[in-house]
Length: 541
Image (cartoon, rainbow, N blue to C red; front, side, top):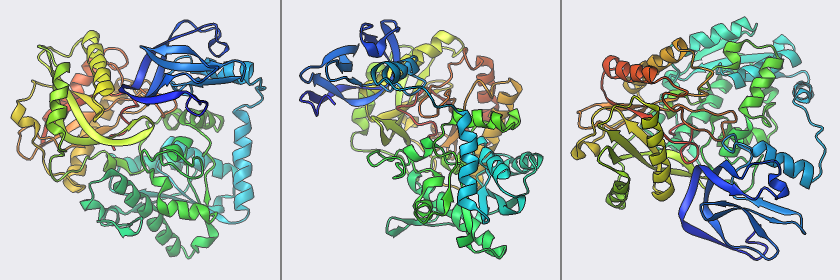
């Protein structure tokens, strides 16, 4: 807005990613009823340098303009994201804009959506059959429950495909949960098929999944393999794929992050969700995909689940990505080192002190910076101090935020348990690909973490807790490391890690670390992810 109307916009040295404090002008209609200091979510590298004619600044973030207005033209702009949970009073800001500035009427309610979803399914399907792929998570289960309300039992074909990347005994638990809902579920064992699968990436045939390192390609291969396996199963049932609709529990964030043309023409791809691959998009263009939840965010799906009277164990089940553990195993054949590696390492040293050591690992993970996907470095913080106080962890969070503001090649920071490493150990990795050994390693670590979460009643408090296997060996030959990534959010578009001692008991975290290193063979170190989203995505890939 500022640029188009004659102002100046520049890329400054400091970018803003994650929670930030701003100072607002409470006399602005946009900020009416709010206090002067506000916590908001930023994700940008460009800033307003000079205001367009007729505009004035109505919010500042440490010298950077955070909001502008032109009262005569009724134009208002914000640099932050008011629509996400991390902007504490974002709903009030949007309400002020919608009701007081745009003068719209609040007529929409969530209750309308249940009838709309059932009506959508019935109109599209008529007397044909539908195929739904059930993971056991709340999205696909709500989708299946909607089908059960909208259609006859004989119209619904429900598959659960065991890709080999499930959690420990996951497929067994999914079948039991769906049976309780009265859904006849067929479990398909396709572990070997997935590891050996390939797909077209643009015009090029990919490597097999078990040899693939790049996370985007892993997601695309897995997404297309889901379609191929399910279509093969339909043939076994003597059904033509042309007579069966594919029903998916796709959510709005899935489509936004995949930059699907159904919701955006300009957004960057953050990550390709398994339900929005090249093959799925082709089926969607042919009118063979039904997505009743495509306008929903996760918190809205949970509201709908309650309306459908689904049990709490389904409603509050921790999300598990469709590609499963495949995107929680960070694959690499050699250390990741760009020509700026040493320069980045040196730039991190200003964040070190006599008590905190900052290191750069030759490992990369996926992040989101300035609304664009990044695939960049992981940094670690280690300390000689015991990690046993809230103050200790809050200090680490502050250091993390400063690092990602000023060292843009780092999109994720984690605390490294144990003694600070020797410099020569930092550069060591163990070759890591998707295979039985790496999957088993991660399943064991994940099982330990989830046992403790369940025992200590932390499932609701922590929205999601991915457990990740990554290739850093820290000098221990053949060893790998494990990351614990806690995430607190409602909308899953943005979020923050749990602060040990606040949302996550320090004793629970310490037990996770101790048990993983003692009980999972070949694990050298455990780290705790300190990164908000942005700049780090929920998952590491």
